[in-house]
Length: 178
Image (cartoon, one colour):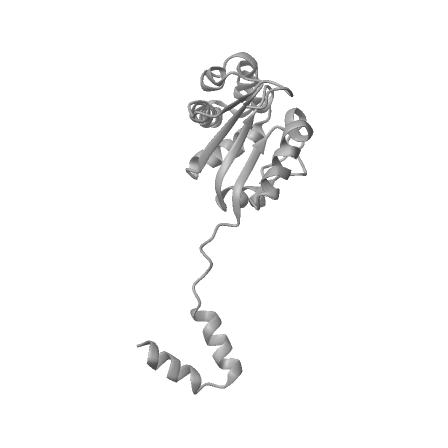
């Protein structure tokens, strides 16, 4: 079979043969990103995410980081959703104000929906508080229910429970090097 394809292609003019090969080539099945970084910029962008991103890049890890940040009322962009879908896994850095951003919660829900491997970093928060939306998360979820309704917020709560239930890294401050 391959012989007949090769014979057929040899008989074609060069430009037709190139078009034929391009059409028959399998698409690259590799994902665009090795890791998607989900974080609350105000809490972690400079002190934690910047050095983490640089360390990943130095090891040739293709890391996606949203450098633009989001403003209140912004919709999650299709390109950001595509980056989540096109990532092998997600490092989710959950900080005290992470749940204060509906943007971060939308990202986390999408990560869970896509069934991506989640590597959580509990940045100044207790994993139990993440699982149960207590402590710094309780008030944020109450505000979100008023603004977005129970249905949407319940998906965010489920995503937080899932992330909080994964064994991850606990980072308590600058001196914590674990």
